[in-house]
Image 1: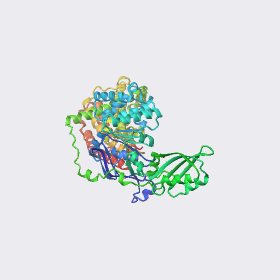
Image 2: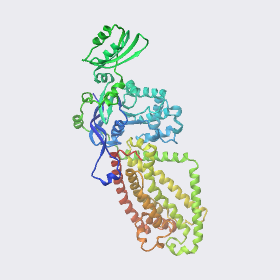
Image 3: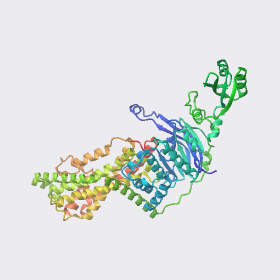
Length: 638
């Protein structure tokens, strides 16, 4: 038999949340066991139901299989790939959750699916073709071009299922997909899930709290309790594993209270309940422990007491009773009984002996094309989101106009008093400060956009949806910043145009080629600081000392509003530790004086040095932050 998923001893311990006490006792490594030694095998094309009470570890197990969480110990193969090969593992799976926040509410359903399709490596034409196929399968046609925010709960779930099927993944992981749906919508979604496995051959893991739902559509059911997979088998076989009792329902006439008391006292009668219909007729529901009493013994007592038996029926153990037995949730149940004999066979030897699955390697051109395609998808997404706020750019433009006008009148106030300090830049304070406030935008964007990408994705729920695709988080981070820099460039251009067209600034000598080089180096140097800031946010969630310190110090000492020569002599050396100082100095000389690159070397070389040091350092820090977040299970928390 071929298996889609194999796990052996898969375990996850989450560290306890750190508080003041843990800071005083750093050697105390307390943890919470979320998944405890899960060993299972799920066959290709199987629909496997995973049940358990809240906190049983079901969602954590799914996140382990999605590589969103790093296991503490144990092994697993997903379609032949180990969990350590996260990118290829994520190519094999499609995740569907009951989380409605994981879409962009101001975009249409089609735009959402196109965007996520690009993260799976689909071109726009391939994504459109796949969306058309899924639209027919899931009945999305008339809703695809409506904003996601207008969808009903049922339509949101169907779009979530479509996203999980975009890459035609062989393995579909469904985490509470019918949560919050009305009965009709839930029934239709269950039928679709059944078809995915039965007709289309997908392997499906369905996490659910609804016992009836699992019994209705699943081939096998696994029950988790306190992180352990206590049992996994077909429903019919699970009934045989519950305490060996037989349930009977009898219609009896003329049975007195003394006979009922005698029946309750019989050895082997576990439970007896009676329902009285009239003075003569009662219905008995009793459970008899096999081997202690038999149906014959019970019937003899009833007959000896002068009663007549009209009918006897045997009743099956319900799924609810099976659930209670294996989770200890019932009033008469103690600890959940582990049944290692019925858990999937041990697979550790098979895992260790398996050869790594071969993956076709992408050529350099294909890799570049795939990267550019994903970057373009992020730009289109952000452009459409920006356009959905129709008045935002209008008001931002007026804000720029008022800012430029304010500094124009401040420049008039200074007059000739500022000229001695501005000789190196042409002597005009307004031109000086205009370049300063315009190009400081790049520092603000670089310092904020990366951390904002992480925080916004966590709050909206879209980060997790992106992370279960084969796209790396570093790619998501960088691609998400492209539009921010493009938009900042538009704003910088607007600053300069207003200065020239409205306030008469002379930029006729500007060396645009040199200015472009300075701009690129500025973005690279500042991006290193921005990614370090995002790394801090990834680990600590709140507070951002990197942005605060560099933003505040740069505004004060970077020469934005005044040349650094006006600062006290003891402060001026600190200015030369800030990238913004070199960036603005070079940019002013390139734009206001038209200096060539050779004349700007003294400022460009420090910018190159900042970029060469900060960018690699920031990516190392970010890689560490992501790994730590996966270990702590906080990757999508905020």
